Length: 113
Length: 116
Image 1: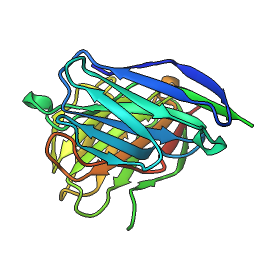
Image 2: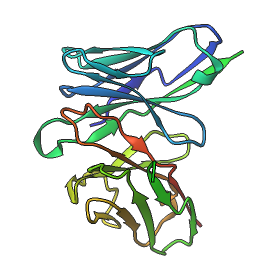
Image 3: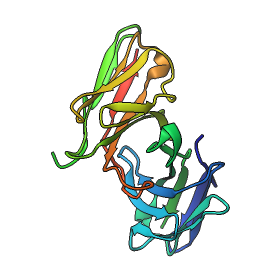
Image 4: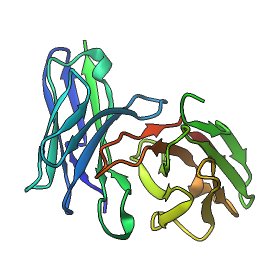
């Protein structure tokens, strides 16, 4: 079952902040965040792991609430280059689907000058 | 190569024809994923491989879709008797196998399939 993202779309002016949320009905071991610009492949931003470890982007922060099975991506002082579609991905770490990476439906972020 | 390579980059085919899409992952990456992205939509999971095995094929839309991976490397996604609703961008990604998903996936540029 794929994770659910909110909001579906966000429009910002340069310098404003945004939060993108991701929730799952399954227990999570890790959450991945990717950004896709129009006509391009998705690019890795961050991984958040159970236990608090994080890997990824220096200028973007995120949180992972293991108990609530939720993650949030924080985009502060947004730049024009932040525009794109953001996807969260959840990783199955048990059972027959071990290793399966499933993505949410995406959040479209548009930053205007 | 340095990244995930997919071919062809574009494919136009007639309804009812079979197509093969190829993915060449990053060397050493044992996990390989296929996703479908329809215009303006999200990343729809199709299938993934650990080595040459496909533990979860639940995302394949119908029995017209099949995939294989050989030598723990190249993967081919085959769509038989293509339909117009198969038109989409097919994305492949690969990653190292880490503990509990602690390794990032790298995506190819995709194959844009158009069924006319």
